[in-house]
Amino acid sequence: MTAARTALVIGGGIAGPVTALALRRAGIEATVFEAYADTAEGVGGILMVAPNGLAAFDVLGLADAVNAAGQLMPGMAIVDAGTGADMMAFGGVPGLPPSRVIWRGDLHRLLRDAAVAQGIAVEYGRRLVSVDESPDGVTAHFADGSSARADLLIGADGIRSTVRGLIDPAAPGPSYVGLQSFAGYGGPGPDSDGMIRFAQGRRSFMGYWTQPDGQVGWFSNMPYEQPLTLAQARAVPAAQWLARLRELHADDLPARDLLRHATEEEFMVFGPSEIMPTVPRWHRGRMVLVGDSAHAPSSSSGQGASLAAESALHLARCLRDRPDLPSAFAAYERLRRPRVQRVAAFAARQNGRKAAGPVGQAVFRALAPLMMRTVLTPKRMFGWMHGYRVDWDAPVTA
Image (cartoon, rainbow, N blue to C red; front, side, top):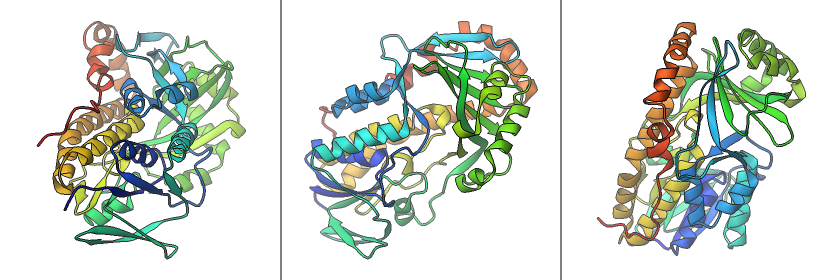
């Protein structure tokens, strides 16, 4: 199985265009196939692009565009929900640029536009149903009856990946972490100094930040036993969800006041928070996974988009430098699996704290001052994660 010169990228969200751009830089021509019939304009909520993600986008010449489209987040704070005062606050990791908060739709648009500007084809309404492999290539068959052929096929099709199931029919699917996610606007609120603040409530969790227009954007992760699909969650009237959130945050500051100003018109339901268990097989034959299809840490990590960009670069490097697909895929997995599993474990710990009850929250508040002086410094908490860099020019050896 010789080195690849052409690729089919399945999935046109975040990972798909980034992968196609990285492949183009490595000398591999890719076409992106998106299952939905239209673009993702306006779809999705807020996500974080951390310093390691900005560095990955910079390899592709996209860091300036991401910075311009996002809102600078110079640091974060954890709030005592009983008083509304900061328990601990810190900036970013010394020596690293600040993270950016960006709407998913805006990030998707700039990545798609960058791919199209480089002549990369993005085809919509092409839902993958099956794949045929042969010694000299792979053919993808789509639900509309069409097909496409190339040297390899890359699954960038997200947490419910079709390609993952084709590589390994026994592959696991996403796991619910016991949290339903919501977001909205709370009207004018406390000036967060550009910081994003996390309020550890007694019965629920809220994050909030002040936007450039003075409006406070917020999100809440509500402990909820029964996992609801996004469609099921959105079938519940917004007024009902808001009433429940107000009840859960009735004794929490500033969540109580922010929710008092929240309106149904500016209320968003994002459905269940999910995380991918360890995926045993990332590749088979001429197929390989990238992004959330292989590794989807909970949103608590703030790393989904950043890890996808890192993995896209590493996959392209391996395909560029290794003599055949088996050795390229093996090198790619060796480079990525330890890191993404470490990030997933970090996110799981954050989820555990969000879902903690009153006793757990009280213990955290009591220990916060000591932790701030010892283990909860930016460098200790995030240095290993945010300081990561992909050395594009370094050759990938066996």
